[in-house]
Structure formats: structure tokens, C-alpha cells
Image (cartoon, rainbow, N blue to C red):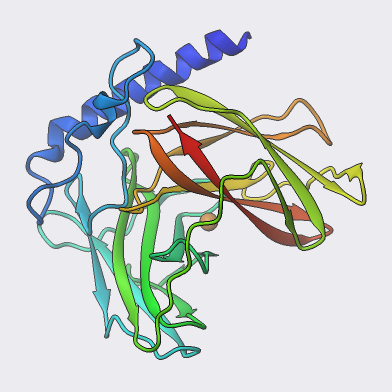
Length: 283
Ligand SMILES: [Cu+2]
């Protein structure tokens, strides 16, 4: 299938997803000003309809709500369970989650300056709550996202903040780059997506000048999370099949607006998961 045809297919799916999200959005949030008003529209470049609304901006979305237990604070370096439930409109605990990228729920944590990225997999207890040890080395405000699909509905990303009191020294966002080094690997990013249109991102991994054939991770060649600078909106990213071993790790994403984004790529090699982060400017 041609890239164009594949893009068109994704566009159709995304249009459906977006429509469904908008249909229920008006009754979903507990916070006013739920951020699904189409910032996406303003940056539309392609003519295939609305971009998917960014996620991860609220504790409630689409009739589901993230409810945490215990204090939302940690001392620097302190690790303690992060325990939470997903509840429906009636406050009932949601227990049925669909496997997505080999896991039923993914927990992403990052400081508000887009440093300190963590990707964890909480364990669900019989009462339906989820728990995972969570700690942060440095002071700051951290965004914690629960990424899941419940009851066969759309993928949902809910998020809350965790506070780590202390001497918080935010770091500036690193300059945009198409090449970064991480854990002894060199990772190159190709692809220049436009706001409001699906775009292809390709990451090539090499070590000592030779291409590295990555191992499967979470049911794909790699895992990618893209967050928008400023509000830390969480983008929907689809892994795509690679042409073969040693080929680039490919993803399809759609940037909802122009701006700067931080991309966190995770790949596995020699049984170890590595994380490489890129700043990308989208126009
Ligand atoms: Cu995960």
C-alpha cells in the first residue's frame, strides 16, 4: 500500500475518533474550559478534516475520571506507591481495560519542564485500583498520565500533577535536534510533520557507526510519547510496521498545533530499554 493510501486510512480513523470525542466532550469534564476546542483547526494544513483533540490536559475526559489515593506529594528521592482508580460518570470503578501495546495501562511521568521522563506499568488489584512505586529524584511539579483503553472505547489519557517540594530549578527546553546520543547509541530523527496533518516520524538507531536492529518493545519496534511545550498536551502516536530489521522505527502522529514538542522515544536492544528525547519544532 502506498504511503498516501495509508495516510488516508489513518485520516479516516482519526476523523471518527475525533467526532466521537467531540460528541461526548460537552458532558464529560469536571473542569470548565476542557481543552478540546479545536486548537487543532487553526493549524490545519491538510484538507481531511479536524485533527484529533490533544489529550492529557485533564483529570476527566469522555466520561472517565482519574481518582488518586493518598497525598499527591513526594519528597525528592522518596518512592512510594502511586495508587489510583479510573471511575465512570457514576463514580463506579472501571475494571475492564483493553490491552494496548501489550499492556492494559501505561503510566507516563514527566516534570513540567519536560525532564525526568518515566514510563511505568502499574499493577491492577482485585478492587480495580492501580498501583506502582513512583518517585522523583528532583524537586518540581510532575505531570502523571494514565494512558489506557477501557470498555473498547477510544484511547483515553487522563493526567494529574504530583508535587515534589524543594529547590526547583526548571531547565530550558533543549534546542531542536535531529540527532541525539543516549546510552551509547546514536539516534537520528527524520520527518517534518506539519500542524494539523498526519506525519511520519522515523528514528534510526546506530552504535559505533553501525545500524542497530532494535528488539520488539511493547508490541512494536519502539514506543513514542510526544508532549507539547507549554501545556504538556499528550499526542496520540501510532507505531507503524518497519520495513525490516535494522530499518527505522516508524510512527504516525498528528500535531494538533504549531509549536515545540518533546519526543520521548524508547527502544530495546540487548534486552535493555533506552530512552532518547528530541525537541521538534512544528509549523
Ligand atoms: Cu507502557
